Length: 113
Image (cartoon, rainbow, N blue to C red; front, side, top):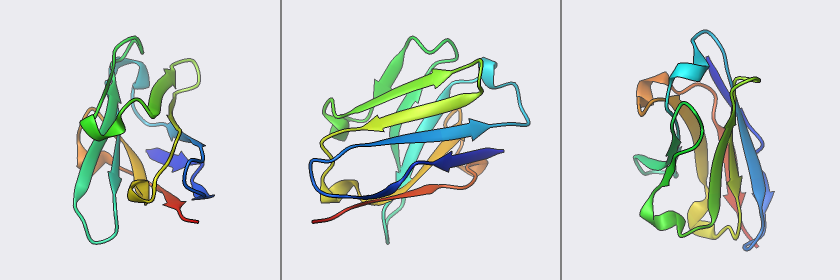
């Protein structure tokens, strides 16, 4: 199971830290991914990090504003969101590898003034 948390309502330019608690599989052996889905749109890849946590990659739209990390001792994935814009408003999900079907509970990020 994957359960994301940490979303909320923030003003443009604000920050949030998302967390994703993983259970039911060997977290430490998988690349993990954050994806998002804005209202009325399809899923969008945001960022992935390898099993060791030392190779993060990001979607082009991120532009250095987000930071992905993981704590393998706690089976937890993180995503730090900085300098948020209204275009970042979406439900954010963590998934195993890049498999959308493994998403669990998402967390809603709303960026609005």
